[in-house]
Image (cartoon, rainbow, N blue to C red; front, side, top):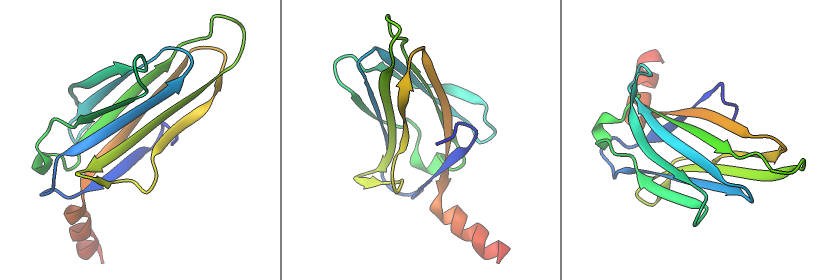
Length: 141
């Protein structure tokens, strides 16, 4: 996903808590920070920090009441370390969102490729209560 677009995550505002999975794959160390922002993009806090040491997948609940998530934004800042030698290394970062056991995206947000220097990704997703989207379509139509 290009970092200049905000992915919309449709969810049920009366359903289960939302969960986010972050998978980082690289032979080199990599770290991430997940942040939340209000509907205007104002920083609310750090939800999770992690790395690929000891396993490649981290899974955690979004610590906000589901009823309050509509139009909130979650952000990520992922850093893949630079190789020590002058050689390319492969990387893969995958982000998925779930509500209960239901995946909220048709696929996943995936960033992959090769790098010979430090690689940094910054991205955002906006939570959208699917009932509010249906209401907007009725009003517009």
